[in-house]
Image (cartoon, rainbow, N blue to C red; front, side, top):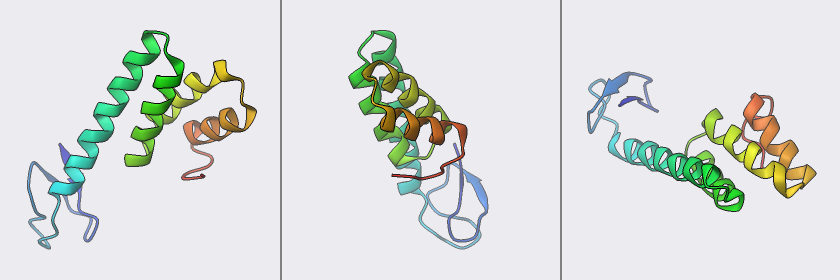
Length: 102
């Protein structure tokens, strides 16, 4: 898994610290993997028809790592609830027009 160092921007693969500046990267890898696991769980819930669980896991994935896939899944999972504010928020995140709006 390739991770960009938050301190210097160097992209590295499967290293515990940045080879350029020595910044610790293992925590970022753990966060990225946790976000991916939450997204997979959310997709499984969505396919099983459990929209509330899908929305929950997609939201957790989004807050760990701002991934457009997590925002899209959250948007699709929020539609059946019919909450306009939540639908609008996830649509904006999925389309990239809102960034990290709360």
